[in-house]
Length: 172
Image (tube, rainbow, N blue to C red):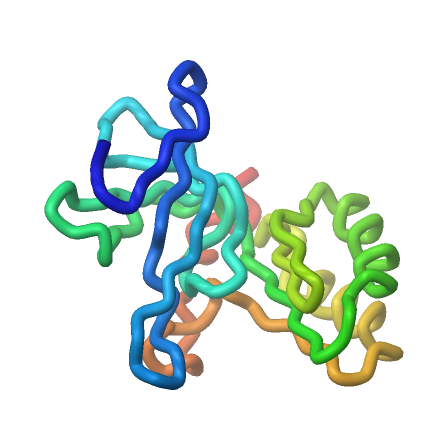
């Protein structure tokens, strides 16, 4: 087994990947553990949940990890899912009870939940306007709570659109 991976199930070929998610205030690398499915090529993995911290990935994306470095991955194929992350200074229980059913009505999913963070997946073909209206409307009455796309902007500058969705829009 390669470094940074723990087996969830030998039969199903699922693993937990430790992926780099940035640096903490002391400059130490932060890793996020994500469920993934091992693909035919042993170094390729399908991400099974939208990350909370790792940027530029969403549920269903396929990545390759070098057997020589657990600190880097290469994005091989996008799933078409948008990664949407919600963060709050307080508990998100009430918000989650309102937001998750609305996301599920659009065939999206809640992928990760902590006390103060949620990650969702929604397909880009729904359109940015629909998704933004949903999150803005539901979250309007929740102070100290924000949402962000996790895979729409360049992870380096946080501003430049990646435009990967051009190949997905209206292709389903």
